[in-house]
Length: 416
Image (tube, rainbow, N blue to C red; front, side):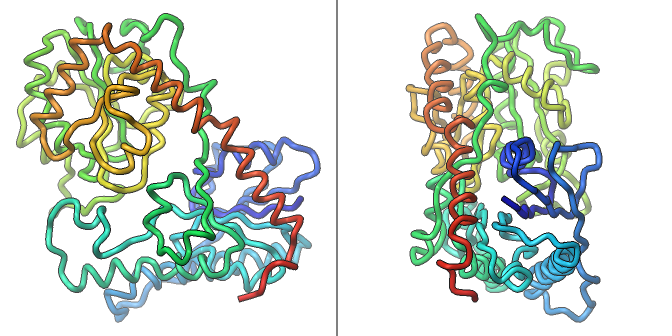
């Protein structure tokens, strides 16, 4: 089976699919990406780089900028696909991440090849994500939200089938498209993200150069790709003084990059980390910013965690949340829709109020003080991932979708 995979980043959500196809005889895999990441090689997978076409003109209407950027991505990918055809590579099936625009012209490049779209989010003026912070949006902002779906809608029409990781995310798409979208999580490698025997991992066994955990008997962990409002970083940081006062032997590990991934940027180049450090005073000897960590050290942090806080707007669910549960963390999660799909209060974790630093602190202090009594929550968290999100169960769903689409070929698809 010849498979063309497309994602702006390599390998991102498609890592496990690419690894399986690459090591399985009989497959030819091309991974088309904008960011090659030369240091990451997957055996049996050929990387091909596409470059967005040109630059945006100065006179572009502000509301068109996002779509024009998508078109430039799509044209760059189309150019790459034409090059692949010239070399004789015609895929039997295409798997592409939808949202940036690079998959918009796949049907033009390969009209007889079924396309499977990976969909993370559909934007809406009245969606829970948009209304969560209770800030009134301007007409321009609402129009911008609507137009963000333009390339996604093109893909929803042209794809054979769509895939999205959670039921919550699927529910955000227009009802007329939901029957076309399969809910299938990417899958968590539960053999890798697993608790240590007789865990948690002793704190003194953590290997984090530059991080002094002297005197730490408890470890509160927080992990996010970016330190930003969408992942509750301001509320978490504001909860820290009360937690540190109540738990004098507790240290805090904040894993993530000081940047914005989803939230609005602050003026004058200030980061949310800088903003919160200016606003809230904490014992800096006990609050440690590790920056982004390699997988191995990140896993160690989760394995050593006494309690793990995960907060999110009603938005895309983070892998880190499920990886923490897979490691048997005692998770304190925000009482928001994507978290409630997985976490059940006092069964496999604890829920708390996203908007209230006081309640976040209270729930965290309770978790730290009752660790022995809450061991079942850790076990149940791990079991939840084994039952519903384990890679061994999720990966076959994705592979079967690819195989079935390739088998059916163009016969069941009306070109659009």
